[in-house]
Image: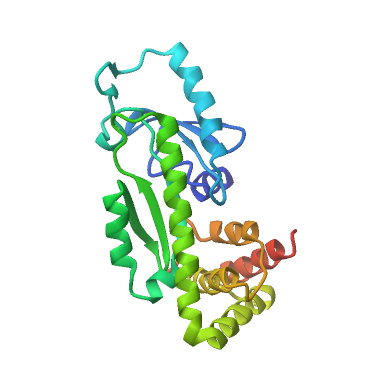
Length: 250
């Protein structure tokens, strides 16, 4: 159960899996789940070095196995979005300020026009993904993806500044209170944690509170793939305790 929770939390698996091999550095090799083989690399926060670790394993298999490959189209996949290099990149990002300004639909369309997908995960959290990489080199895909993630983050910061023009005190208060709650709560559910993290990220983008991004990403990880509707009292206590330990650097 612990291993299953680990794989699910780090998004190394999705749905039913027949055979799974786990390497170091959070790279998983999933056999016969959708594709004959899927190699997944993941990290907390955006880390493009994950691609390099995954590519090393991919190249090793490419030398030893006969892959379905076409000179015109590249690797042939059942998922058409991966035809070509076989590569798909995704990154979670919080867009609290953009949502608050009512600009999220416009941003989603702009992102789509640039060749990416922006979909809602929960609350103000979104997933930016590549759509189709046919005819493009892996290095180009990674570079462009890194660029779109940076643009979204810059837009979120600028949106936060616009919000702060008329709501500075309220934003600072919510961010400060959210930090205090995370450090002291005895009971906490996943929905509350998600909301508090959105407040803190907004405050951090404006320089109102100082919480390391790595800690926020670690806390965000706790929410992934969780059933937020049915949580026992022991789970509420455990989540609050885990949050406090993370913030203390334990």
